[in-house]
Length: 630
Image (cartoon, rainbow, N blue to C red; front, top):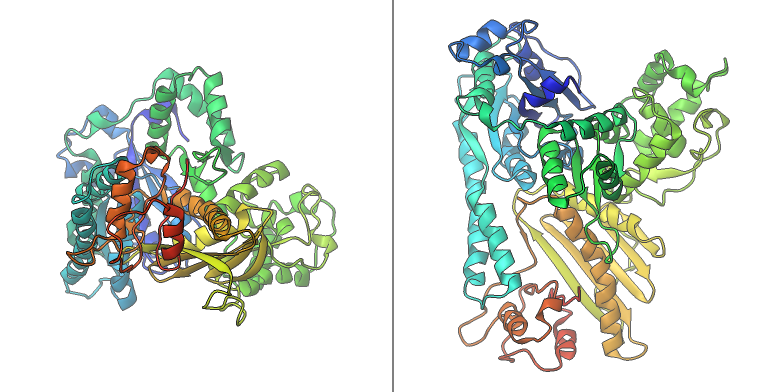
């Protein structure tokens, strides 16, 4: 992590992001060197380095100083910028976003030789914005050795998608502002207005670059440095006090694979022992650490009694790498060759006995071909760190809660060679699904969830609709986290983008579709409709709670809960009826979610009836409405 002085004068983070093969790694290496260079092969890891552009050790120091006419302070000359080179495996970007500082400068790279790359740029901008409100973004085109195209058309497409998102937000705001003011309406309006105010700031120039000829590299380097070192920006750098530095020193031994994650409560206990007794002071310090990239804080769902649980990632780069390294797509024999040449191989097999190639190839082929990974194989994937068994046992629950790995994979055969000497409590036969590798069945079993609900069944629905350009991979993480959440449930069916579980007397369907994440709960009526309705809503609410907790990590992501349009002038939407209800109800503070229905035509009732539960039952099959007590 460097010296205390270095911590004080780190100017921020620059993140190179883009699709696989876009040329991110080559551009990053060219950033630090006066000579063009092309990095062969695809990166399957996340690299974070401190770059000191003006230091005597920097090969480009003289050129960098010239950008500012040598008008730099002494602190600037010794300052660093943390550079992130993100692996291009697109489904991993969601989990990597949780590790990247929100205040980073993003360099979005696309390959001009690959039309798909350019077509994905608008979506990449919205994905970045979902986590980093008001993100600063530079667009860099790679492989422009002979291209004379200015690539300004990609900016037009980015603007087109951005205008579409703003249109959706403003349409909902127009409806909300017509409603009577209450805490729910007020909070929703404030959230949407904050999204409108802090939109992504995309540089108006597309930088045309080549790692072969050096074209455009100096201009790109200058644009990046001006973002961090222009006049006046140094005064905004957070200087750590002695107490904060003490907490940083306490966290340092946890890096390099040691204690990568901890609970929010454990972090608070650690800070309290160092004198952080005021919650506001600790919150301010934690936020400064997050902005510096010293740690990441992720909201997770635990229980309704403890709704604000968090995971503290003490080494964001290491956690992002740990997730990337288990999603391997290399040739199994190549992996075996690398493993056998590793200097750490004796940690796994301290005697002269080594597993044969077939055993190792079979273990990695589980990942590549079947999308499953053995628990005892994890240390071999993470061999670059000197992890012990306790470190891995701490890491697994965080990955389960975030949906990176998935419980319920079929057991593997017992292979004695995979019973590692220093990891005896890691199961040889236990496997986890890797849902992002999309090796689960593509469709559910036929007839397992009839379109028409069985007779004497109460059905309630829920529905999230996401903005255009949103990466659907996020809902796959949420789906996996939902499956891992409650150990008492029974899994009825699980496929690539869907899940059916049974919890008590309630069956729940969760399905991820383009732009849509859909829930449905069915409960057989045994002791009356009202009780069945309560049971269906209460069970469904658990899965909505998981989803809401996960989505809270993406403050710039616009999504809505169905259509909130007014049907016609002679009737009011259910959205309006519910807003009126919360204003007149004595227990209005007990309503957690009041959500409009999906294309629900409501004409016959001018107000919410006294028997609200019966009214909800009447519309539950067609609407997305939830009344839930705090």
